[in-house]
Image (cartoon, rainbow over all chains, first blue to last red; front, top):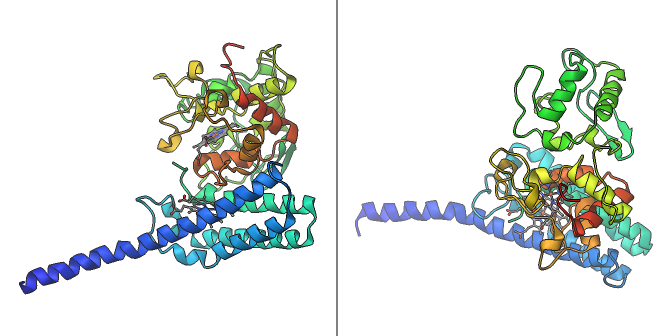
Length: 147
Length: 233
């Protein structure tokens, strides 16, 4: 193997390695988002009265959401949009705002955890609505439509 | 009205951009005729068409009296010489798909023909969806002339705004229709039955629908569960 083709191979690896890191982040954040979605679905079905109201389930779901949100911002490395990702490029032009929207969700989830611990059904449903708004608040600006 | 000043309506409180009578930054120089013409036909006082993003196809349902009331109301506001933020286009361009202010005012739907076979909630929903809510602007396919194709009302649009493919929302046409409370969640907090949340322009729409009264949200959901083309009530 000539030095030249070896170098070409290394260069190709570098080229491939770059997007792979981003791809991992995209996959990971999409998985985390799916967790958020599935917990939201579980809770919504209680709010809609399709399953029995259970404050403990809210606690559990909210905690799972809080875990999924842990370090979320790190999963949005600059420029990791396009391809299969539904993230909008403007995330990185508005990083401060994006971070604030992330924090708003973290706070709303913490609020839901508190309400769930206190066990008041009305307060829990309200807190769940706030969480939903925080999800929408970020998707509105930074996520393209679902496919 | 110049941004940041709240306007309380039956549909909630809004913080609209500058549509005060200010002559420079507002719409003070508009005559009633120009105003009506812009609203109904999508033609600005300069003769520029707002077409196609301006949803005048829905606004034509507004009566002269409604438009007169609206203009009088806007004119009664103190003029504020403040530009709208840069990313906002001037009025009424900034009423992107009309979802910012006045169409949410509780106009009397005089041009709307109620269907006597349907409930009051259904009729109210039909009015909001086909009139001031103009959901069909995105959710109905458009013919070549960009008029809304009422024959396939609310059945989705391959080429929506910003190149978005917009799903159909006529639940009577679906194998697995969303139930009433699914629809309510969608317009209240932007949530889908599978726990996902809208992105794209629908998330902006939810900013407004989330502010409607519970009765009006219920009316929209009731109508979407089984709508009919507005031309065929």
